[in-house]
Length: 160
Ligand SMILES: [Zn+2]
Image (tube, rainbow, N blue to C red):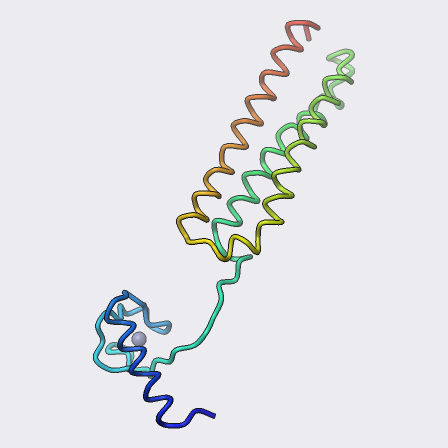
């Protein structure tokens, strides 16, 4: 498979790479910054260069986006269910419950876009990914705010 010369140039390349980067040994997590050989100084394992890709389903930023947008959907959704269950006490809240369901439906759009952007997110830098993920954290407060506002308006007009 790999001739001695190519594995030798691989180790040279690895040493060169570690001159400028704080890469970690995949086995013992030792900081390989400016190592002199392609062997880990701590665990003595022979290090190799290989191509890999980050499994986007596992990366935190992507998951954070799904969770925060899902919360913004769940808030009005469960509010609608609660209204429907409590309708005997609260009176005619059918319209209000419908409004909540519409709100929940609206927040499905950013969730859909986020799921669609998965492949694009792989190509972005960590900073941009987390920036986008943190931006999705605005959705739950927006959802809660509009929920609160809807209840407040309904209470004012219908005297729940
Ligand atoms: Zn090691």
